[in-house]
Image (tube, rainbow, N blue to C red):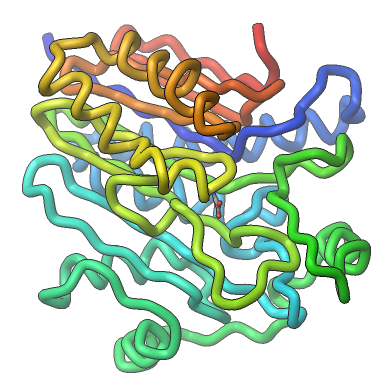
Length: 310
Ligand code: GLY
């Protein structure tokens, strides 16, 4: 009998065992479990993969622990600019938004772009006009304020430096969020959302809202959501590359995922990871960093919630 599978991530990075307090570790695992369960329940009740990934990502966006939605990092001018994208593997329809501000759940806006417009990608002021047109509530800056995030920004403020939350500093590890799922009908979907990089300037956009780079889904191959240094994922067109390795080279999901994360991405100098699922419900969760916040329920019903390398 066909089953369903789902995987989520909360970012990959310098996650070294023992560097986090047990309480903090427990709070991450609890937030991951909650987001996984939301998607899992939708799939269990014969809901679509598209709805499951959207809802799981919304739960992660609502948590201050991850760099997306409420937990988004600060830009160079002290604001929060968020990016998100979603793709339906059955129809190959997709929606994406970039550089949106004050939106509680950018992934919902990305889905609205997909379902309510003839476009795929809306950015900046135009995306905000679209949100206002749909009567989205625009949240006060205080909704996105977090003391730790603010401190991260203060350390970089007035310099030309920027920092991906998952990188370098051993005590700073928050990340992009994402979800992939295979529903009971064998349909796939992927969703990704992020606040980008602390102290980012000049309208910098990473891979998360880019279909093919940070997000991709095709029932014929796989659904993918990436996390890491976005510039490398854009240059490697990572999510689509993984799909192509399955489609054109006949690789398994696991082999294709390993190839992009452990061979192609490092050759470009890129660090990070991804989550992927295929139409048989197989799951791959590779990363080339010390850790990746991740949780999954595979097609055998096995649930895992992990942070570090095993
Ligand atoms: N991967 C998220 C970003 O680079 O913005």
